[in-house]
Structures are given as C-alpha cells and as structure tokens.
Image (cartoon, rainbow over all chains, first blue to last red):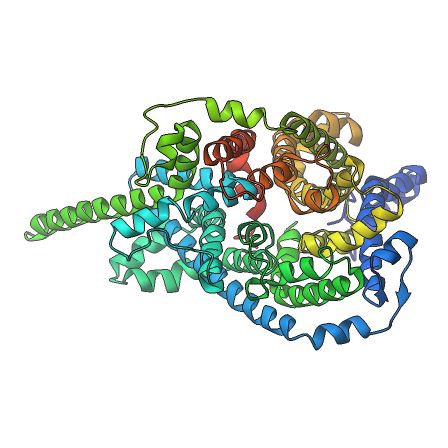
Length: 326
Length: 292
C-alpha cells in the first residue's frame, strides 16, 4: 500500500529519525505532482463520461416527470406533469403483463444458458484433445456472430416455406413441422427467440467456466473420485465451491443481459408488433421512440433500471471485490 | 494408482476399458455439441453460395453443389452497401481511437495509483456497463435532437462512447494490473524516472492488452444496432447492421441467398478479429475472479 521506500519502524528512535529526515528532504513539488497525476490521467475520461452519460442520465430522470412528445421535442423543452407518467405506467395492464412475461423469459433464458454452458464446460474436460479443439472452435464461431447476423440466420432457418429447422424436426419425427409458423403464438415465437439467445450466450459461459475449471486443482477432483464420490457429488462439493465467484458473475451478467435484451426479439418478431409478444425492452421502445412519448418512455426506463440494479446487486459487489485484489 | 495385490491387473484393465468407452461416449457428445453450435454458421455460408434452386427446394440441399458468387454480387450491389460500410468504419474507427486514448490514461491511474475517489470511479465503470442501451437511447435522442445531431454520424459516435469507453477502461485496467510492480521498480532503480520506467517497461508489456481491448471495442461497436437504428433514419447515412436488418424489407419474397451473403460479409471482419483476441479477452474478463 505505502509507497514510502523506507517504512518507519515504530518504537525505535533510529527509525523515526530516518523517517523525518527523509520527509524533510523530499522535494515537495514531486509530492504534489505525484498526488495530482492520477487525477490528471482520469480527468479526460471523466469529462467525456460526464458529458455522454451523466448528463443524459440526469435528463432521463427529469424527462420521466415531464410530458415530452413530438411537439416538445421540436420546442426543446417539456412540460412538468409530476408523477403522472409513473401513474400511467402502473395502471397499464400491458406493463404488468409484459413485466411478468419478461421475468419468466429471463428465468428460462438464464437457466438454460447456465445449465447448458456448465454441462459443456464439464464435457470439455472429459473429451479427447481433438474434440476439445473442435468444440471450442464451434463455440468461438457462434460467439463471434454479430447479433443482427444471427437474427437473420434464425429467420432463414425457421422460415415458414422451407426452413431447415422445420425439415429437420419433421425428419427426426419430433412432429409435423412442414410449413409450421414459428411466430404464430407468443410462446412459440419467444421460444425461438430463446433458442437464438441461448445459442449466442452459451459460448461465453462455457469457455469462461472451462478456463475456471482449469484452475481447480486436478488432484482434488481425482482424490474425490478415488474416494468413490460420484460425478454429481464431486461437482457439488469440489468444483462448484471453487467456481462460485465465476458462477455468480456469469449468472448476474446473464440476468442483466437477458432482462433487457432487445435486438433479438425486436428484429425476429418485428412483423408482429402485438402486445402479446412484448418483452420489457420492446415495450419501452414501442411506448417511447415508437410513438414519440419520451416522458412516459423515461419513466419505463427508470423502472427497468431500478429492477436491474436490484437484480445485479451481487454482481456489483463481486466485481468490486475482484477489482480490489490489488 | 499403485498396483500391489494379485487381482489388481485385471481390475485395472477393466477400469481402463471402461474409461476408454466413456471417453468415446463423451467424444460423441462433444461432436453433437459442435454440430449444434456450428451448424447455423455453416448454413449461412452454404446458403450464400447456393444457387437459387438449391435454396428454394423443399428438401434442403446440404451442400452447395452448384456454387455461385451471384448472391455476393447482388449483396454488394444493393443500394447503400458501400456507403454503409464506409459509415460503419468511420463510426467504429473514431469511437475506438478516442476511447482507447482516454481509457488508457484512466486505466493507468486506476491500476497504478491510489487516490481518493478511485473506488467510486471503479464502481461507476461497473454500474455504467449494466445500463440497458434502450433506457439510455431516450435521453440521448432528446439531447442530441436539441443540438441537431440526430441523423449524423457524430451523434452515433457520441452514443457509442457510452459503452465502449467504460468497457475499455475496465478491461485495460485489468491488463495493466497484471504487470508486476517489481519490473517497474527495477527500471526505476536503474536510474529511470517513473515516466521513463513507464515508457520502457509498461508500454511494451501492455501492448497486447491494448490490441486486444481495441479489437474487442471494434467488435462491440461494429455489432451495435439500437443506437444506430434509432438515430440514423436516412438510408444514405446508416451503419452496416442497420442496412442488414432492413435487407429483406417488408416484401414477402425474401432473397435468402442475398440475405445470407450479406450476413456473411457483415460477420467476416468480426470473426477474423474474434479469432485473434478471443483467448485474451476471456481471460481479461474474469482474471482474478477465482482468486477473489
């Protein structure tokens, strides 16, 4: 912690002497420079962050108490309406239905992502080297796909006329999916969205967990299995506790991402602007940008951010701890 | 592991056989995982090369037998493709360059100095990265409209700074922290000033981290959709992701070959860059998580 080259030795006269001697000798200008340098280094980034984030965030809060439509957008200032926007929001049945749908959607997506990601990470430990390279490259390939590209890809694979998914499912005798409309009901459409999101999210989870597994002492797992512990028990008693911090971070990140996911459902379900398909982020978009109601939209955004801050409390705590290692 | 008693060898052999069988099973499962993960990407690329008949046939053709470059030709001759490539490059280039310079300075301060407000700043960097983009887009849109910057690339660059800058600070800080303090001190003992030690020792060591961070920042900005979609409504001035999202338009008859060729073209730079830095970033994001 201390940057003093010679630490004071408490209780001994010699130590104190050396200390005061050095203190007096040290040029004060250098000390000032040293104290100011970090602020000078942080300042440019801090100014930009204040301009592009702090000010808009302040505007967000203010907008949420204002009526701010197209007219106000042109006039450049809104009219204060107090808590009216929040009242409108809380009395909107669509809001509550959307919130409920989004919570279920988030639980399913995060659950599937973490479960499959963990299983793949554990699988990577057990397979031969060449299979591991193959699987890892497959994961990286999926990870590298831009979201908009992945959406178009899913749209093509699930298309009504001759989607390859329809064909494969029919051939595998899962059912008759020839000319099946995947976007006909909210459940099916959000199911397809889930498959897209989970496919895109698995690589990060699996590769990170696999990297973490490599840090769990191999002897420990070996010893457990020699002692006759089953795979499940070894995982529960040895692997999981060691990886708990990573699990915590990955789960929180997934919750944050999936709760506010926008691009995938918005583009994939774009042709159905039906309220039955809304997730929170789409509801927010349709109620604000979509109809030029920026005041109400800001209120929705604030409610969303509040929910996310509550959800990600553990993530922030963990990250601050990690950030404090040194 | 030690075999001492007489019945041990057959037992060991049986165990080895069972292990080999298990290995085959795990490998088969691994191949299945590979197939599921890689198939969509394969399907995109193969569709891009297939002839129209192969694409539209009821039973899918697994290989592009009559491979053609026609769809790529169509895609790059779609209106605004090259304009939007250029726009994407401008937006991404300026965003990454600006962010990296600012982030590097801030990251050095956060990693190598102790000062009041340091913890608060780190906390801020973490919290900022959790703000959903479409919560931020509303005030950003309103503020940019006030300064008549909607519909212009400058506006988009400003909005991209909101996520690229905090991310770069956070990641670079991780890379700089990883450099042992002893190296720096050794250089200072050798008669260098702190700044000299910094240039001679720190900079070369952190260079790979700088490259990795800038590439990852590039990918994030290149892939971004919402900000560009909301801000850039004029088709003359859009980014590649917005162009791709609007590729099939509203018409019923989608040009799947062209769409997949366009998708492939959009993905190629990202995939190439991703392969370069993936290992480093996966480490950078969670380094210290186990130890912590």
